[in-house]
Image (cartoon, rainbow, N blue to C red; front, side):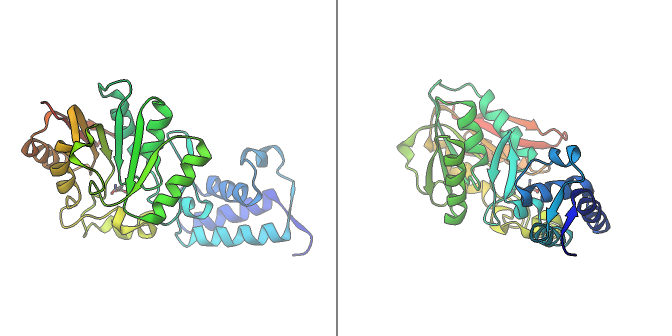
Amino acid sequence: MSGADRVEALLDDAACRLEAAGMSNAAGEARMLLAHQLGCSPSRFRIWPEALVGDDDAETFRTLVAARAGGRPLAYITEECEFWSLPLKVTPATLIPRPDTETLVEAAIACPLPEVARVLDVGTGSGAVALALAQERPDWYVTASETSGEALAVAETNASTLGLKVTFVEGDLLAPFHETDAWDLIVSNPPYVAADDPHLCCGDLRYEPQSALAAGADGLDVIRPLVAGALQRLAPGGWLLLEHGYDQALAIAALLKEAGFGSCFMQHDLAGNPRVSGGRRED
Ligand code: GLN
């Protein structure tokens, strides 16, 4: 077509394609993709549905819709995802932050901690948890570690875009830190999906870094060393908080006790699933 397409027609056509591909929020996603392409807010389309879109933008938009219809996660197409009301950049090097993970942030800010706490987020990915904590508690010293240099670069970009202060460290789990570091709080949303879980082959998970999702036969291959190594890196009275799978709470309670943690607790996510467990270094 020469000239230009109307917003309304482009969105209707895209919504049909996305719906046919099985997307549950087809119209909403079509608006988000067009807003991304045009660099505007999706609400503008309601006010001005007859606005014209140039050929180049319309063509690129159709390519984005085709990618989404093919299964590519919306967040990887737009390179954006909101977490804790923070607009975050995400790329295929990082997990796409889940609303469930806000339970971990809530548990962390509810912990009885010193006002100027020293906090470590292990395996920060896009930086979601560390940045939410830095936003909520500006007096905390927040450090975040990540084994993937590519993911760490995304987290650093997010921190500077949002103007939030987090110290980033590249390295595997607790390896970059000393036993004398004495953190007041260690939080982590580690990989915890069992390697043969069929969900890894569904939806967005197919496109996400498997190293950020899967952790051995029972999904606990990362959590086990993390729990075992965390206690001696906490200050007396310090807390360890972990996100985990809906069916892992009992196993994690056992790991926390075995490692010597006290005051163990578990918190459900908004869907009512066990999602976060924690314990305290009592001595
Ligand atoms: N909660 C995610 C999912 O099952 C997994 C995130 C993770 O492994 N940390 O989709």
